[in-house]
Image (tube, rainbow, N blue to C red; front, side, top):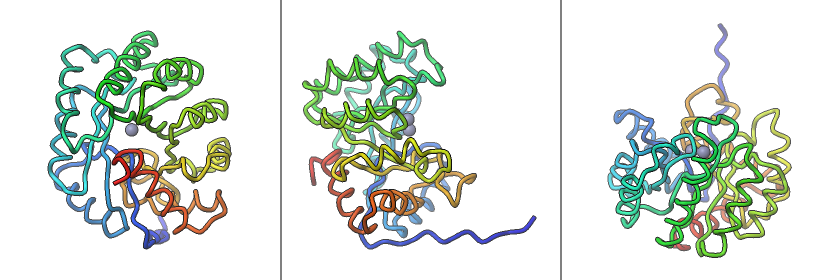
Amino acid sequence: MSKKKRRDIPRFTTPIIETHCHLDYLEQAELAATIEKSLAAGVERIVTIAVSADNLHRVMELANSSQYIWGTQGIHPHEAASYTPQVDAVIRRHAAAERIVAIGEIGLDYYYDHADRAVQRKAFEQQLQTAVELDLPVVIHTREADDDTRDILQNYSEALLRKGVIHSFTSGPALAEFCLAEGFMLGFNGITTFNRADNVRAVVAATPLDKIVLETDAPYLTPVPYRGRPNAPYYLPFIAETVAAIKNIDVEELLRQVNRNSRALFFNGA
Ligand SMILES: [Zn+2]
Ligand SMILES: [Zn+2]
């Protein structure tokens, strides 16, 4: 097999904030190297996302282990059946920590349907209520569930003062428009580099610059030209390049705005 050298990771001067990845999927040994390589690629902050009752503690540990890592607490729609009052109590206790910046990822996934849809809706609603009470932004995962996501968000959006992000946005333009009007940001990742993602690129094109944040969703969704390898925050520059090309602006200019957006989203602008 021929070994074609892939293009090096481009290096921009504006710092990049990774708004969504899953660092707990890495072995401890890989973790230090991944962070080092990410810093070298210009990544200055990494938000690692909780998904299940099993990783709530690990995300806390990671967020407390490094000055570059922050975390979230929440139960993914795939795991909605495990969202119990006991788990909610853990989420609320952990979420009081300074290094926890959001409730998530929460939402609806009708593509995989790993959990019963009624159970998904209930866990989504209850965790939105948790975010309202704790005054934290939310990280929302929604797939093939545009109508129900809109109907549920409609009931909580006003009370959610810090709003949040619809991460890995792949839904239709109507849901994008609704979420943007409600003050949510949209998170874009390596999908924007995939051949068959014209629908996602159309949403990027229609999203105002001050509503865009970048993520990798690592270890999934590795951007071109490294598709097929495990993903990591150090591939963010490829996503930045693609989004800047869609918006027809300079990458540094995009990154400056996206950095402000990410700080507003998770760090109260700091
Ligand atoms: Zn997700
Ligand atoms: Zn995720």
